[in-house]
Length: 184
Image (cartoon, rainbow, N blue to C red; front, top):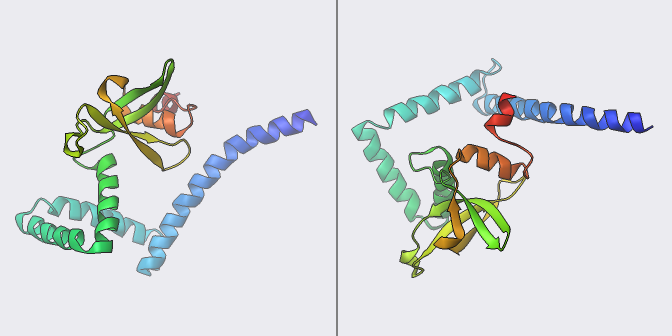
C-alpha cells in the first residue's frame, strides 16, 4: 500500500504541472480563436501576437506616440477607468516595461535572525514625508499577490543576484532555484 501511495504522489508531481500548463495554453489559443471567430485553430493567437509586435514597433512613431499620449490622458482622468488602467499598466511595466520595478532584490531584516526577500519599488519616500524609508514589495508564495512594506533603509540589504531567480524562489515558497534549477 505504501508503494502505491508513493508512486501515485510521484506521478501527481509529474502529471499535474504538465497537464495544467497544457490546459492553460490550450485555453488561451481556443479563447482567442473564439473571440476573433476564425476557422483555423491557432490563427487568432498568431494574429494577436503579430498585432502586439506591430503595435510595439509602430509605437515609436511620432504620430502614434501623440495618439497614445492622448489615450493615456483620457484613461487617467476617468474615475473608475483610471484605477483599472493605471494598475494594469504599472503591473505590466514592473515586469516587462522600460521601467522595470522588480530589478532590485533585497533581504529585509524583520527581527534578529529573521529576514524576508522582496524588491525595492521606491528607494525614497520623502514625497510621503517619510525620509530614510523605502518601499519594498514582498510577493506571496504560490500567488500573484503580495504586500508593500515601508521599512528603514538600514534594515534592507541589496542582493547581488538575478531578480528572476529571487522571484522564482519566493513564488515557489523556497522550493525553486529559478533559472539554475530549470537548466538541470
